[in-house]
Structure formats: structure tokens, C-alpha cells
Length: 399
Image (tube, rainbow, N blue to C red):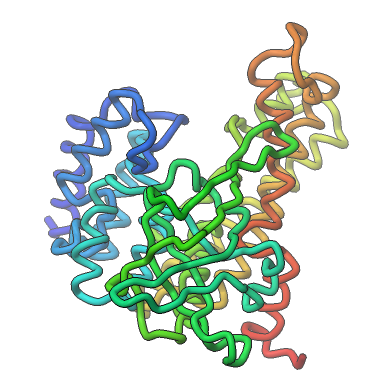
């Protein structure tokens, strides 16, 4: 019997014994935020997985991870999927900052921040976009000035996902305003609970407020929390975006395509069609919409197979995907938005309700989720930006 087979058997037995019922099936996942309270089962699941290092199983053990190989990590996620167990911890620390610090952080930064992230004791938010610097991120104007052992940061960030529940922010700030546009930018970490940080949630058309405006008025970042070299943060910032798009595109072990931000109901497209349109000869009764469901399912299957191939290529080369992440972000975002469009159309007028007893909670959630999904092709880099990256960096087309 191989070592991997033994690992699978041991993992299966441990998961079956330790995964609470309330952490199985669709539902909330722990974000690591110290500002939120979670159900007992969700907290228990985080705690036992963190103790084992399986919140971030592929990270080195000295940084709070499980030290698993890529093959072992894949087995772990396969066994979790078999049990329908949710991921114990998902946030920007595990998916974006953590992998970036593993590449660019100092040993002190890794031990101080990664261990806390792995334990689920800090949630992070991203200080990139500004009112005048979204798709043109290099146009950012938030400035950090030298103040002895600290930097004083002044400026505004916007579309700061989850800022109201975040404990820390990783941010791109300008530290040399006289340098060329893509130079003079530094990558810094700063705590959110300080007098210089003001957060204002932005209410979206769906009624939720997952995004925020963040105002920085002499906010403090310690010099020990400068990642990489001063004025050379653009490269680090771009690398983090590749990790972000890798996660959004479903790359990496256990990645999967997650529901868009603000989407609250996780419905099966075919089952919705059967429920609202009826069944004829074992199929959705309405031919035109039935064909649309079939097309969406075929495209989704093609996406998953492409993700699997990219993950296998990444494992064989031991390299994290680079610009190819934009391919999966572009197509995955379009698929996610089309999914929500299709669900409300399958529901007919019942998918357009905003309030009232005439609509079920699921139907109301579907309408709000449809509205929330309008943003999925914008955040994390717009579809247009991804297409430009693919044209230049993947296909090698001229400017």
C-alpha cells in the first residue's frame, strides 16, 4: 500500500470524526475576522483544522501550515469534498497575502503574520483601488511618508472588500511621487484598528455592502511591515493579483469557482429549471431555456477541465500560474454572471421579487444575487483588463 493511499485512509477517518455536521453542505465559511461571531460548528471546524495545519495545508509547518505535498493537499481536498465539508477558512490572507509573503516576505514577517493567518485570528482587506486609480492602478495617489520607525499614510482607497470586518490591510502606496508612474510604489501592511483609518461601507443595488471606502489620515504602518524594497512594490502588487485571480479562477488545490461577492444563494441551474418549468420526458419542459442550461453546463464542464489541466501542469512544474490566471478570471467571471442570469430567467417573474409574501426566501435571494453578480466581471480586474493581459502577456500580440 502506497504512502499516499495510507494518507488518504488516515485523512478520511480523521475528517469523518472531526468535521461537525454544521460545517458540511452549503453555508458560511469562517473568514478569520476577530470582529465577527460564527456558529459553534464553524468555529470548532476552524479550530481543529488550524491545530492540524490544514487551514493552509500546503504552507510550511513553521508558518502554521500542514507542510503537505501537492499530492497530499489534493487528496485532503478530495476527501473534504467527499464529505461535503466546507473549507475551514477562506480570506484574503490565505488566498492572496499569504502566498505573496511566502515569496517576498522576510522571515520575521512570515512568522509574525502567516501563523496568525493560518490560525484564523486575522482577516485582511486589500488597499489597491482608489477613486482615480482602478483599472489604471499605477495611477494611485495614496502616499506614505517616512516618520522614523513608521510610515504615515494619507489617501483614500475604494472598493475595499470586507474592510468593515478586516483586522489588517495590505496596501500599495506611493513613496516617491517624483518617480516614473510604475515606480515609487511600495507594498505595506497596516492594522485597521487605529485612529487614522475610517471605513464607510458602500451599499450596492443588491442591498448588501461587501465593498467599502477606506480613508487613511496619518494611518501608521510600521517599517517592519514594508514588504520587499522601498519603491519596488509594483512587482509584489502584481504578483499578489495573480494569486487573487488564481483563486477567483478556481486554480489551486481545492480552489473551485466560488460564488461571486454578495451572492447568497447557491442553486443548481438544472434543478431550478425542473422546479419552475416542469419536466417532460425526463427533461426541462421548455426547449429554448433547456438548451441554454445545456450550453451553460457544457461551458462549465470545459472550464473545470481546463482548470484541472492547468493545476496538473502547475504541479508538474512546481510553479504558480502567472498571466494565464487572467484567462480563468475572464472566463470564470463571465460564467458566474451568466449562471445568475440563467437562474432568474428560469424562475420567470418569481425570480424578480424584492419583498413580499408572494416570494420565497430562495427567490428573494436569487434576485439579490443576480444584482450582486453584476460586479463579478469588474472586481479583481475587469474583463477588459484581463483581455488586455491575455493579448499582451499570453498571446504576445503587439500593442
